Length: 478
Image (cartoon, rainbow, N blue to C red):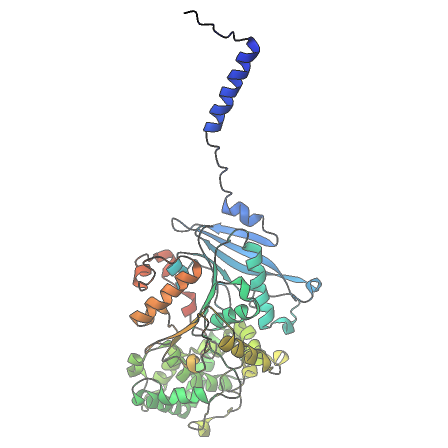
């Protein structure tokens, strides 16, 4: 049989070839454009300056940054300042932990506990007015909890385009307080807050809780008695201690003329603070180190230096913390203790219980009670996704936050101090707190209920050996 074959013209052949090529091209998947480098992304953020990138452990990158902030968020035309930040970058697909000490920004790489638990990125901020993150000239009336919370809000808005996952805020002591205030004013910024050892001085003059603490702390009344007797012994050796203190200050170029006015007044506050500092930084197991009433002047002097630190009560020790004392005087409040047990030996009894005492005269200000009342009411009634950790033997926990029932929790580490964290909780509480953080951050897994020991298995010496939240500060600086 004769089969007629269709003749292919040159035009038909060309179209057939083109169609074949198109089909072949469609079958080859398009190559995805490479993800932009994090350094390039950071440099593109308005107001953000990459000061430097420093070597970091494998899997991380570390940047020192500044972010331009208005000196007054209600009046952006009133000047700006550069707020220091540091960024530990893990990956844009990971959660972000916004950390602050509440004071200066640490100048070394580290991971806070939530960052380690979540294997997250971390930004650590310096709080406004802590040098060098201070407007010039400085209008101290702009150092408020709302202004500082708005600093954090602007940082998040600036970086959400890069880190679009869940954000968790954290800090210890004043850093924990700062995280709470941020959540109060900008609850939509965060998936949750982990606040460690955060004081909550609701009514500034109502401080009986601190007196009850010092009457009941620990399980050994002998330790409490020994600390009271130590203070009496120190004041009975006042002349010897003062001579040594003044010689120490002179030898180290330290002065007393900007804040306390005399070495004698600084000495009195340091000795009174030592009882507080002992429980803040030490454990009941250290009670044997408290000098007996028969101790020598040298033994008493060395104990104060080891626990509270004589240098902390000089101008050079106090002035770096003047933004804290200003905020305590104006909004945060401060502890006021009953000193009847020692008042007969005091020369400056009124000065110990006043935050303004630790400020230069031109910064002393009146207290506004409303901000802390508002914060306390909001935390207790309306807040959500708040996690608090306290130490049972920490004086700063005498007046804690009491969170609402809206997916919020408070835990206490038995027998522990101002360094309490999730790892110090009993195993059941540690597991619950760890699981909560993972759930809020969107990284909950079948293993989320495990305790922190799982996270500790990933200990990275370069990042986890030094926690700035545990750095020593003057005792009545939270």
